[in-house]
Image 1: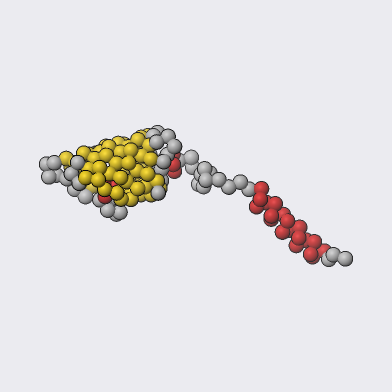
Image 2: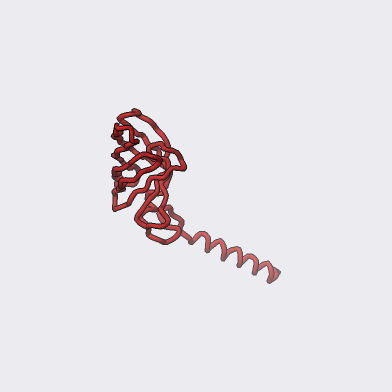
Length: 144
């Protein structure tokens, strides 16, 4: 004869197993349920940059959300200025506008175009370090 305690334990284990297997897991679920379009580009990206002054270089750029403005993103290490250096951009659909701003003595402006599949961002921007020679730069960001 099976004892009632064993039946209850088995029923509890079976209930938990059914609950876990009935859940759907997917990468496209927004964990904070915010429907924030910035979530699509928040990531670490490999920048392949071509600078008129410095030539070709590769480095990592982190894109994060600007906490005080839901339209802005923060690009850390943009133009390879250092991981603690932040350039801000405004996200508008598949565009990132790098509005004119001075970061560590460099005046930076330009724009990025996000690919429809969200795998790359192509940037064109200008950097003026005050030396009298503006650096015209293009960069392709790819997710790593």
